Length: 344
Image 1 (cartoon, rainbow, N blue to C red):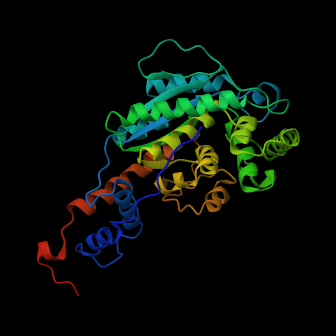
Image 2: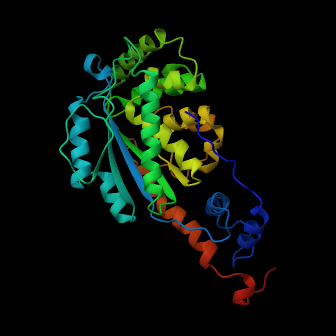
Image 3: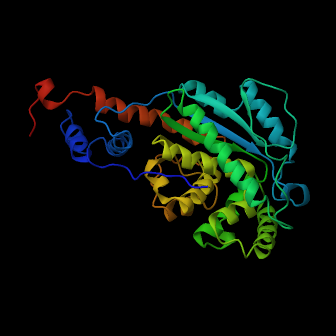
């Protein structure tokens, strides 16, 4: 699949900077908020940017490796249980989304459970779980391309409702292992430096996890392209997020990047089209080992560091107020001239 993503038009950059510099404040005194405001203005190609119908989409999927190997201290059933929790409004992401007036969507990308019809659940299941990547590719390249397409379609539908700002969350027992493998492949980093505790492993558990992931790497040495690597190690939720990133950038939306797992999907997306990075604002550095190095590999500067290791899109939800503040000061803060304040 090909995604035609335009590089951001910087024609208005000087005008945007002039508008920001002549607000009633010392030049640069709003720090990172000024950078955010400039980026959003450039993405939207306007001097009056907006945050319209901000939305977070949680993609959920199960991982076949969990059936055979202890890569997570939690059983696979927790994926479906947490999806039901999202639908019932009981998770952290529900609380933060409601607090910050964010629309929340939940997607069954490939959960090993048959959900009843629910108006709040997007049914996009390709298969009930990926395969065990210590034995074979997690998914075929054809199914990986289907996942990219479904992620893109979901974003297109959300965009059509008037949303211009979007973030992605995930749920899938075992998906930090997939993210570690993707990070190692895309950044040429030893798997030991990419693998952390995930959802609560002990130090001994992490060592076992590393051994399992090394085995997976050893049988997928022929996976060299981005799509082959994503198919070998990814989850359906990660592949759909990859397609969602690419489509959101194609549609020139402002994209909030969450934590370790969603950033691994962005790594895959950036290998398919590097222009996707121009549309991304990085919400936070997670407490998961490897995320900081992952962000450094793409020169990302995250806004927050709350040591989150939860996923779900929680970091993105917590960063939305900063984006709203950046847009608000550009649009509503007085200039020296309009306020009659002397400008030294």
